[in-house]
Image (tube, rainbow, N blue to C red; front, side, top):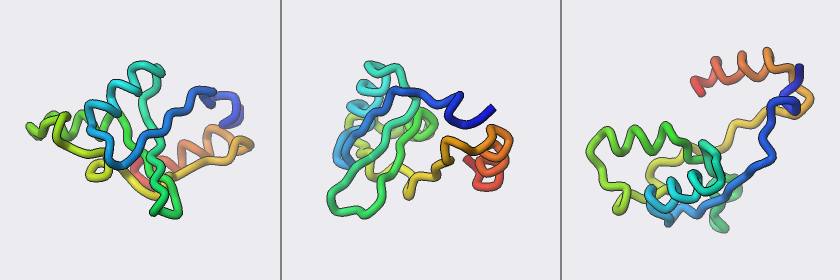
Length: 97
């Protein structure tokens, strides 16, 4: 089985100046657990995930005040569609994703 077999067709992009609440609402609306973060001033996209949101809320931070830019990971770690799922899992493990 290859990565392409497990890929979602849903993608979502938010900006670094969105609040975590705005990002969460868009993620819920699209039914996805992550959003790419696009910024015209950055050469590579970032990513914000459900885990990033939970860490912030669990730390007592306000999702209305916290910005995506302060909680996203960058650059995005990506797998090629033709990688095996085993290779992708090994890479995720190696990078702590």
